Length: 284
Length: 284
Image 1 (tube, each protein chain N blue to C red):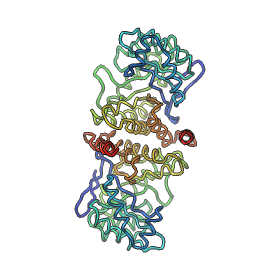
Image 2 (image 1 turned 120 degrees about the horizontal axis):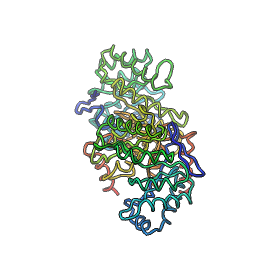
Image 3 (image 1 turned 30 degrees about the vertical axis):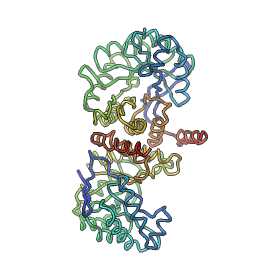
Image 4 (image 1 turned 135 degrees about the horizontal axis):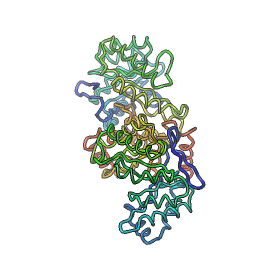
């Protein structure tokens, strides 16, 4: 099953058997104070530069988030989308917890976007799915509902199934629903990594859906975070992941993704791996 | 299910839910010309030093191999085992393709050894299992038989089942049979990594056996081998591996193993991971 995203000029397919789709996470003011201040004041120069840098580093899709306290998020997100689409051709992942911001973002977006995100909470699904359906977009479903984040992989699978079914009722095909297994920090919860990986495996084998996750959360609070994130990215590949939301400028993480692709047989003739090593050798 | 190995003074348990057991691979003349020349001339000083260095670097078990062309392997292997057992307390993995060498090695070994290895070939099983049973040792079964190495994970599982059943006929309990899924180079065979990982998962879930593999073979012929080996070691953890045969002095590989343990919830209170980073920080 393939998820097809597009911009006006470019199409990207996400699915099993392909290299993992890298969704660049940098255009997000959360935790980036300088960027947040610039964005709040209407200066979007760094947004454009971040877009170009991430695409150069291997991102096939860019996540765009404009969540800044006290700022008109719908208007800012729409502006960010227009800027990013004016400098790059990659499809975008429109990221907000504010339904009106998703709506405005989808209105100005050129192509088939990925919406980040919906949960298994009934009122969220009823608010987000009509937008996704109207714009023929794809959507990321987080495996949590009114009762919070289930502890077991089996219960997370059940939430994924609920999201899939409800999406279907809105006319959204299964190929356009990606599931995020929710990766919590292993430092606080030792089961967190194993449960997320098992959820990936179950969603892939039982529902046949594409999957996506962020990796950096898993190492929160621990030393050696780049090495942990990189190892986790390789492990998600072994569990069937099809897309990751990450910082492509982080070379350690990128190595984990490319190694995972190669070791799963998804890097044809080892071309991406070898090209990356040639480029690194040329720089050295 | 736990595999219990021992020396005269020390017991090691291998099984799910524990950190992956690191079996040090360095005491092996294959590909180490200087070591081979020394061993052939009866100089076993480096063998003792390699044993200590590997244990200091985190090996819980040491593989010992004395396969040198034109050398009396049974006599040399017995001597190597005696030297290694005189300098360290960790249990040993007695490694030879020569049945008489396994026999002599088991005769002199103090404790419960791991025998490396048997295959699913009937004559190998009939030669090796009686030794394993008589010495109450554990044994590594390679998933290949008279027809070679099966291409699919399902067929490798079938060979593992044959090995398990035949071992049972010789009175060897399932806990003492570890399966090696056979990791071939991905550079030559793009499916190699995925098939090995799927075999690990099937052997674990269908037979409940412990598993072991070497990781360095997977990267043969490719650039960036340490990063690939490290990623693959993390991926085997995600697929349920319980022991790896590797060089613990290779820090990149060791990072992949420790990250895998932590991310699977097998590093209690993240102690091994944090201790390794404190030691690295103290050295820097």
